[in-house]
Length: 224
Image 1: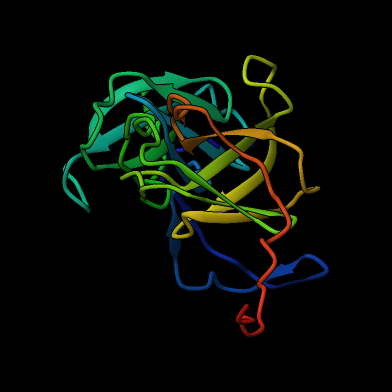
Image 2: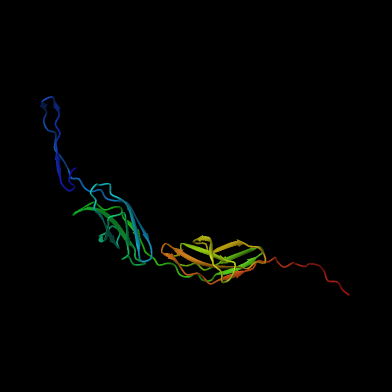
């Protein structure tokens, strides 16, 4: 039931019946708001999503979100939240930001949370250079790596103009993938790149038709 920010002074005395001994030495303490913890910053496209664990202190009215472009600050307040979630939509792609959050009760604030860092980035560009090489009951796809991609989405369709569905997720640095496919059947493929900001444009479509290898004829020629 004490008031945060107010300094209190204490002594202790021993008693026995109606007798009270002398006071102990004096100590003091100032209750404060506990800071939030476990701050996490997740980058997006011109956005950073911040989440944290609430302060255990009673009376927290809001959280103040603070940001810097230098690790360790100084920090500038960029928003407030009454929850444990905040979207920083003032963040700019390809800039590194350092965040802290404080708990607040009126004019009183806690110490800073842990510092979290994030760099917003745009979705990756279009996948280029996709090729499909047919073999015996197999198709191998290859494509050019896309900067800022964290994964590739391999999509398949039974027809050129059909619906392409994701059949395989490939994580960087891989830029190739093989499939087992019946000989004589034509399959269509395209690939897109993704990262935490979203998915880029699909590649151009490619197709392949696996076939049995041509027979190799050996022997010797006969003279007439």
